[in-house]
Image (cartoon, rainbow, N blue to C red; front, side, top):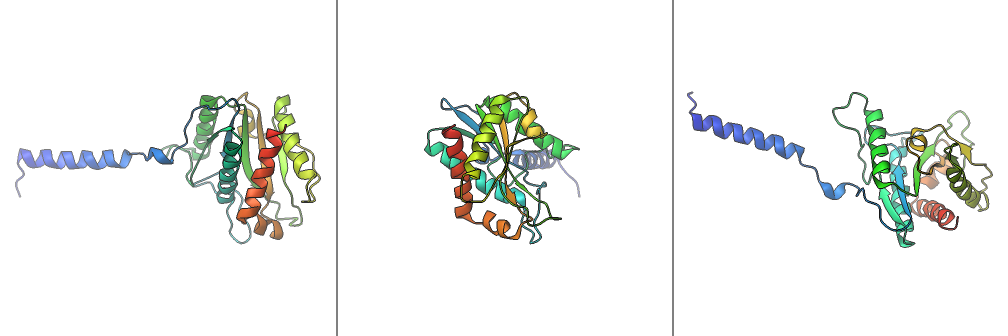
Length: 224
């Protein structure tokens, strides 16, 4: 079969169009990296995409619950007039798909978001797991040991839960986590419970319980 120059041109146009279509990003699903309001919080839903985080014995993935709690937390803050940026608003990872170290790439993208927003506070939402002792349960806060503000916010959240009827009695602890140390902005990491604890695993999947966690976290910060 012989091909004319016009045929080659048409094939080239179709091929180029296919490449461009594959590169189109749906920006409606992306977070807005802009500071709003006098007090602005970056909410970081831990893990995502290829990185599922902790997984329960029943196959429940941490990344999905982190996102659900983070969305509830964003609503709570916004209802109180607090500006909010989320590092991820969907199931995806933030990693560059061509990165060799996707975990590192994902974390660096979170760092970029935080630096671009210049927030008053970063709250990273996670879940814990301790399979060897499944009775361990309860929320735990961590903070950047170099920041007194971080410690103050972590203590406020921890105290809120310690004084609740959830039978939690813990002290906020210094945490050596990338998200706490990647910028100079006050940052706390909240481990909202243990997927390795059977009863807490069920609670963490409950929408009303997720909303209660978010409400208490938001109230602790707002009243700090």
